[in-house]
Amino acid sequence: MTDTTPDAADLLAIAVTVAREAADTARSMRAEGVSGVTTKSTDTDVVTAADRAVERQVVAALAARRPDDTVLGEEYGGSGGADSPVRWVVDPIDGTVNYLYGLPQYAVSLAAEVNGVAVAAVVRNAATGEEWTATRGGGAYRGGRRLSASVQTDLAQVLVATGFGYDAKRRAHQAEVLTRLITRVRDIRRFGAASLDLCLAAEGGVDAYFEKGLNPWDHAAGGLIATEAGLVVGGLDGRPAGPDMVVAAPPAIFGPLTELLAELDAAGGP
Ligand code: LIP
Image 1 (cartoon, rainbow, N blue to C red):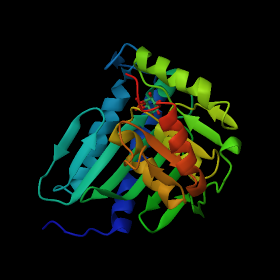
Image 2: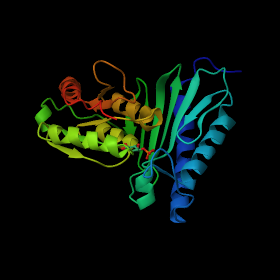
Image 3: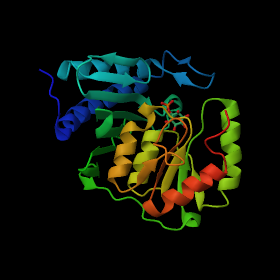
C-alpha cells in the first residue's frame, strides 16, 4: 500500500542509512584504485566503475525499502514504480574528478521529493565521513549540530564558491564572467562538488555559491540543506534553481548577487 504523505523524518532515516552504505562502497572501491573509467559528454566528463556500482546499490536499497517510489540518478536516469508521490534524486559520487585524483572532496548526494518538492536530504563526504542532513521545515544539521549560514549583507565582502562545466566553450564563458565578478566580491573558491559546496555554504564556510549547468542530482539535496540553514536558493530573474543557474546566498545578498550575475550574463553562453 503506497503511503500518500510519507513522513519526512522517515524518509531521512532511509536516506541516511542508504547514503552511509553507499559512501562505504565508494571509499572502499577508491582504496582498491579507480577502475572502469570512461567519459560522457566530453573527454573530461569522466565516470568510473564506482559511480555506476554505487548508483546501482542505492537504487536496489531504495527499492527494497520503498518499491513503489521512483529514482532519478546521474548514471542510469529514471527508474522504479509509478504510483508513489516520492521520487529519490541521487548523485552516487558528486565530485567524480576529485574522486579520480584522490582529492577528499566527493560525496553521495541523496534527496527525497514528495510531489516534486524536496523534503529530506543527506550529503555524505565519502572520503571524510562528514555528513549533512535536512528535512523541510526541520532545519539543517552537520552531525548533531544545527546549521546557520552566513548573514552577510555586503556583496563586496562575500566569499563565493562556484564551479565550471565539462565543455571547454562553457568554461571559457564561465571564466570570462569570473574576471568581471571577482572585483565585485571578496574572493572566489572552487572545490569541485556542487553538493559539498552547498553544504559548505549552509555552515558558513563560504557566504554564497552559484553555478551554471547543474543537473537535479547535483543540487537537490544540497539545495534543501542550504535552504534549511537560512540561505535563499534559486535561479536568476525569479526563476527556480535549475540548469540555467543555481544560486545560494544570504537573504540580503541573493538579490544583489543574482542581479550582478544577470548583468554579467552568467546564465548565458554555451
Ligand atoms: C560536478 C559538480 C560540480 C561541477 C562539475 C560537475 P559530477 O558533478 O558537482 O559542481 O563544477 O562540473 O558537474 O560530474 O562530479 O557529478
